[in-house]
Image 1 (cartoon, rainbow, N blue to C red):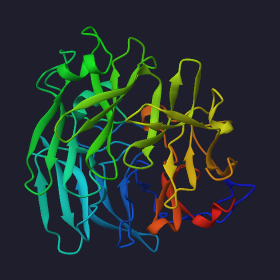
Image 2: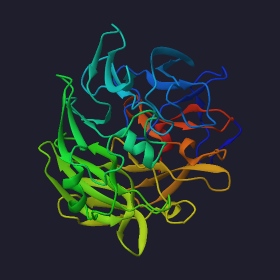
Image 3: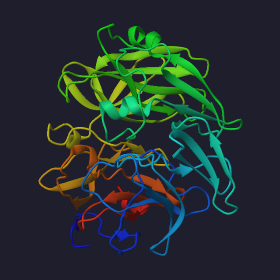
Length: 386
C-alpha cells in the first residue's frame, strides 16, 4: 500500500485476494455493486497481452477479500471486461456478455438461483429501466481498438465503409430478441463523415430516462491516433441528430436526461471538460486544470450521486495515475490519490483507474496495478470533503 500516495486522503483498501491472480472490474460507468452490496469482478490469469479467442475470464463477486465465482466468459477485454454489471431492476441478477457455440450473447444470471437467460446479441449498454440493451459489432470495434472489442468476433462487413446491414441494434431484454434501429449507411452522412470514411460506433450509453442514448461515431484512421469523433444522439425509434461533428470527443457521463459532462473540444482551439446540452448544443466549461495539459488530457468522468462532484483519472504522469475530483459548487479541483502504474507492452491492455461510485455512493472503487498485478481498491466517499 506504500505506492498509494495522497496529500489529502490515505485510507485505501485493496478488496481483491492476494493469490497471484489478476482482478479487475472494468469500465467507470457500470454498476459494480447493485443493491445487494457485493462488488462484481473479473478474474484472469495474465495481464501482459491482449486476450485471445479462447482465453477465459471468470466472473464473480468479492466478499471479505475472497472471490466467489459465478461463471465464465470468453467475450471480454481489459478495458470493459465482459460488460459485467448488475441488472438495473431485477434483484440479484447480473448481466455480462458470453460466447456460446461461436456466437455472442448477453447473459442475464440470477446469482442466488443460478437461473440464466440469453439475449441474442452481446450488448454494449443496458438501459437504467432494465428493458433494453444496445448492441454493436464488437468485431468492428476489435479491428479499430482491440482493447474494446472481442477476439474472435467476426465483422462480416469489414470491407464495407458504412454497411446498411450493420449499426446499432436494440435488444429487448424481456424477450431476448433484437432488431436493427440505426444503420451505418444512414449514420455516416448524419454524423458528418463521407463515403470514403469507414465508420463505427465505439461507445454508446442510455440516458437516465432510457429514452435516448449517446453514440461516439468514429472513423478508422490512416494512423492509429488520428481518428475523428462525432457526438450523435439516438432514440428507441432510430431517430438521430448530431450535436458535435468531426471533432475530439472522448469520455462522458450523463448528468440528466439531456445534458452530458464530457472531455472534448467544442471549439477547435481547446480540449477541456464541458457540460453539453444535447438538445441545443449549448455548453459551459468546467475548469479542471489537471486535465488541460497535453500529458494528462482526458478524464474517465463520473458524477457523484449528490451531483456535487466530478471524479476521474486521465493518463499516467511520471509513473502515476492520478484520481482527481472537481467540485461543481466551488470550482475547486483536488487530487484524491495517485497510484503507481506500469507501462504495458500494448496500450490496449493498460490499467486505467476507471473510478466508480459503489455501495450506494458510500465508497469509490477503482482498478489498479500499483502492486504489480491487477487489483480492485476502495476509498470511502468522505474523500470528497471539500
